[in-house]
Structure formats: C-alpha cells, structure tokens
Image (cartoon, rainbow, N blue to C red; front, side, top):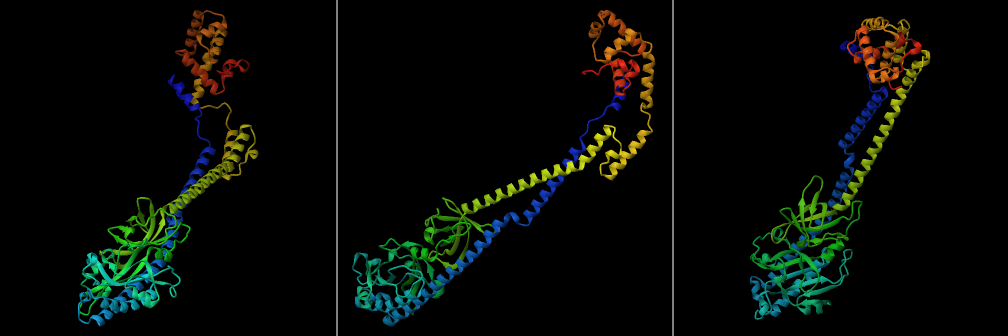
Length: 531
C-alpha cells in the first residue's frame, strides 16, 4: 500500500504559482524599489526641504535688512546722545565753572540760564536725530523746601507734537519739561502734560547714571527699559547718557526718546508668503526676550502682545520663540547696546509659526498624493508589462493543449519557442502508453489478476471505482450485505490486496494513468467519483 502511495505522489501534479503572478510581483517590486530610490534621492537632495530653505533665505534676508536699519538708527541715537552729553557738559561747565551742580539748588535764575543753554542743544539734536523727544536733567531743583523736592530735578524736555517717520524738518515742537519762559521766547507751545521739573523717580536709569563711574561716554550710553511717559498714555524707551563735569563727577542725565508709536511707524509689519513679518527690540537674557521691557513694531493682528516674554529655542537656520499664546519662528541679533540693568538689547524678526506650519502640512500632503499617484501608476504599469510578457506564452500553451501545431503556438520569445519545439519533437518519439517500469509492472500484474474475477466480482469492483460503500454496492446489486462482504473477501484474495482502501488506491492509479478501460473495457469505464 505504501508503494501505491508513492506512485500516486509521482503522478500527482503539484499546484504552483503561475508565471503571470510571479512576473507581476517581480515588476511591482522593481518599480516600488525604483520609486523608493527616487524618493530617497529627492529627500537627500533637499527637494522636501525647499520650503524650509526658502523660508531660511527669506527670513535671513529680511532680518539682515532689519538689523542694518535698526543698527543704523540706534547707532545714530547713541552717537547723538553722546554728542548731546558732551555739549551739555560744556554748557554747564561754562556756567558753573568748577562749582558742583548743587550750587544751582534754590537758584531760579541760575537754573533758568542753564536750561536756556541746554534748550538750543536739545532742539538741534531733536530735529537731526531719528527720535521723537530729547531731554537733559540737571541734578538740582529750584526749591529744596518743597515736599517732593527729593525727586524733583530741573531740566528741559522737548518733543515733537505730531509723530512722523518720513518728515523731520518743520514738525511742531512742544515743551514737555522746563521753565515756561523758554516756550514763550522760542514760540513753542507747552505740552498738555507740562510740568516745570522732572520727577526723577519716574525717569528710568536716572539713579544708575548718577552712580556711573565710567568716564568713557561710549561705555556709559545705555538703553532704558520701556516705561510710561509721566502724565501721558505713551510708552517709551530712551537712549541715555550721563552729563559729566570737567572734574569727572556726574551733573545729570540726557537722552533721546523713542515712543512705541514712533517704532510702530518706523517698522510696520511686512507681508510675505509665510505670513506677517514683525520687528521687536528687547533685552535678552538667559534665553528669554522680555517684550514688556522693549518695543515692538506693528504686530498686525497677531496674538503676539507687547507684554509677552519670548522663550528662545535656537535651531538650525532659524529659532523658535514661544509664548503662552503661541509660537513664532525668527532670528535675533545683538545691537551692541546694554540696558541700564546690564542686559543685551537685541533686534528680532518674527513670523507666526502657524502660517509656516500650515504651508509645510500642505506640502506634505502634496508629496503624499504625488507618491500615491506614482505608486498607482507603477502598479498599473506592472500589470500591463506582466500581461504583455505572459499573454503570448499563455496563448501558445492553450493552443498546445488544443493539439495545435508548434508553428501555431510560437510565443515570440526565441528561448521558449526553441524549448517547445524540442519537447514536441521528443514527444513524437514517445509511445503514448509508456510508463515508468515500476508503475507499468504494477499495473500489468494487477490487470492479470483482475482477469480471474467473475462477472459479479467485476461489477462490485466497478462500483468501488465509483467510490461506493459496501452497503451501497449491496443495494445496487440487490444482494445482502453478507453476500457483498463475501464477494469482497474473494476479490481481495484474487487481486492480492489487503483491504477495500488498497483496492481503491489501485483503481485510482489506473484512473490517473488513463487505463481503466484496460480493466473494464472502453464502453464500461466507471464514472469518476463526484461526476
């Protein structure tokens, strides 16, 4: 029985994947590999970072331009503040000679004379500087007996009445601090919040300037934190410098004013494909930019507030600036100035991150859909190529199955056509019923023993070949089950088989070798099971 099983295995045709499926899988894998290679090369060459590179270049160019403009403006302010300090020092020295500034306390005429000498300097500086106010404070007061005299100091403060960035000459000047006679003598109006003396407790940097021991004016020039101009709604920052006496002592402070409105007019928000580009000038310390102590240009309806703190995270190409309300991308550069509390002043260029983020998301979606289209195209091309390759071979095989000639089944592939021709020529010399020797001898021996069966026994074997059970055989032949079993015993003995299962295996072998007709005759061949 084991021998019969081995023979049946040899005659069984194993199912294998078709050439079309294999070729389709091959073409698909090759095209997917090609697509992956193209995407990898595109990634390495920076195709997917074009948006980031463009932003880096655009942001860098805009920031460089802003830094140049702000540096020019703050440099001019610092230079004018130093010149004003020197001129004011000379003017006070000429009046006080070697006397200390305190000599002017309670001396209304001396203070008036000092303020008149300072006024012409301040007005000239105001009209020639990129600012909207200029002042000089003398460390003396007209009346030391007043309650507020401790914080009250004489001096002159002139401002432009109407802010304008483009026009300087011809703008209206008002007197904000100083004796009113100066306004009458010069044809000026008094500011609507005019006072004769300064409240130095409200003037940022004043105490620092009085304690300054650096006689180098270039090292003493400072940038103050933002503060509200006393009596007004305006916020200002100032570039201040001490006024030295020839002896080296400090006689007061002078400076130039920049209001937040002036800075917004100077640096409006610029539109770009990445969103509004904004400018801010603020002190930076320990990775934090404090806008509440600096100034901003126009913010153009963004969620950035002039009171925010920006937490800086430096990255390659540009930095990330985070606030409690949102994030920005940008750059910052030190201006070489320090605040009165020793922090570096930086200029910043900022763009809302949400604009850039939405553009990056859009680019990624485009790349995804392009990749998907490429994959679909590659998939379709794989099917087309596999069909074009396999179709002539499949047609040739169908013709051969239909007993077509070799000439009719040419595939167009020389190697395959040659193989078909060789096999056809060999098949012509093979005897139709020639089987391997062991299989042929096995079938011949069984056929010889089969001849010894009676007509009834042959009918029983035929019904077994049609996959019937013993009970079904008895019913079909109208015999008892006992008689059918007796026939089985005789059949097993004559055919030299041990069981019905071994008998069925022999019959299956005859069927696969197409030799059942040798047992039962061509007209009486049993039907295949399940037919």
